[in-house]
Length: 224
Image (cartoon, rainbow, N blue to C red; front, top):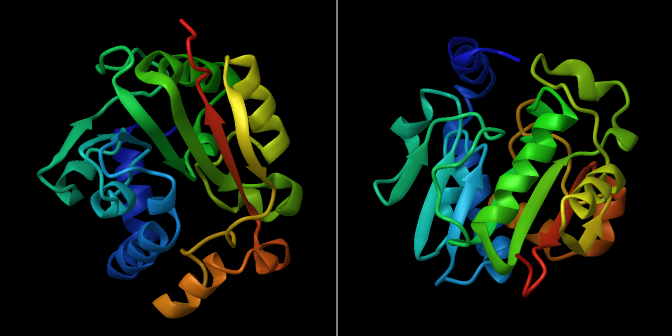
C-alpha cells in the first residue's frame, strides 16, 4: 500500500488537471442523486474523501472526512472535520454518532479484506441504528483488465462480494446495483452537467454504460 508521500504524488498526477471539472461533476451528483438519500440534518462521514468533492458539495448538518493523503485538508471546506488516518485503525469518532458513511472509489485501494472488514466494524460502531453505509466503486466483473490499470488498486470487488462482506459485518443490504455510473473521470472526456443529470435520472441507461456498483447497507435498528 502506498505511503503518504506516494499517495500525494499519485493523486496529484492523476487529477491535477481535472479538479475543477470533478467539482462540477460532484455538484451535479449531489444535487441530482445523493441529496435524495442524505437528509440535511444528517451527520455524514466521507470515507476516503480525497479532495473533498463529495463532502464539500453535500448539504448536511455535520461533516467528517477521512483520508491518508496529506494534501486532502487543503481542499476541504472549513465546516469539515478531517481525520488523517488508516481507516482500518480505530476511528476518532464517538459511538453511534453518524447517520451516513459515504465512500466512492475507495475500498478497492485497501490492501486486504481483513483491512476492509475492520473498516466495516468501525463503520458499524460509529453509525446510529438504521444509519447508512453508501459505497460506490469499480465492479471488476465488468472491468477484468482495466481494473488493474491504476497503481493503487488492490482489492478486486463486485457488488455481490461487497454486499456479502457487509452482511458478514452485521449490515443489512437496502440496495445493490451492479451497474451504476461509468468507470472513471480521470481517463474520459469532460461531459456537460446537464448530460450527467439526465443520466442519473434515466436508470434504463445504467446497465448500458455503468461499470461501477452502488451498494447501500443499513445498520439494523436496535442492534448493539
